[in-house]
Length: 244
Image (cartoon, rainbow, N blue to C red; front, side):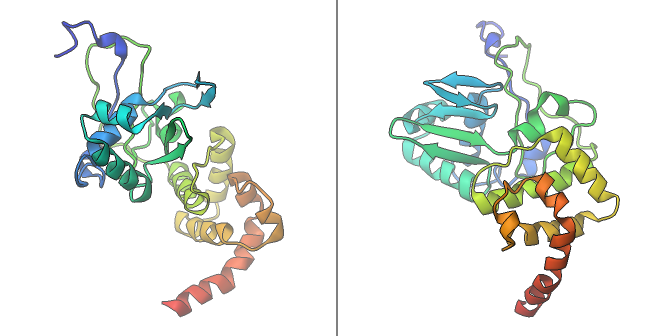
């Protein structure tokens, strides 16, 4: 393989999910998938400070020219791909300054944190194929995916839905406290189905309740206010049915 003789293995590797083949990103137009892969390979796998900016795992600083060079694409192709990755696929977010852009890959910690990569690792859905960037390790080849027979834990499904609704409301990534959030979700799953929980999420993120509006809209608030949300959901669902 290229790199084995050239001594480039020290640059690390990325891991891709096989489910990527079925994704909207893989089958999108132009250089969308290529730019997505370039972003994954450029993203930091641990916290770093670059140019005075604190970056989390899954984030990196770049510019359109730099990203175009990495992806072997034109600046216009990169611009188009980033727009589709952000707006259509909700794969990443972009914060722009007068000097550079900070790209954050959504769901990086959910699927790429150290405690998630074991035999119980949940498989991402079609548009959430992320990789793990191991810049600091020597490896002998590119490790592609894991088996497709993995079962997604219910709490991970719920947390993924919660993060999606959070992003729809605020256009920023929800950063979960995995231990606490999963415990709260598992407790909720004892009495409520995933489908019902998602309906309550919709009510929660659209609630006009003054207390909720002053909070951080985290999983803890959602679960602590579940009875109130349940009451609010009844007229809301009736209104939704009437609009169909």
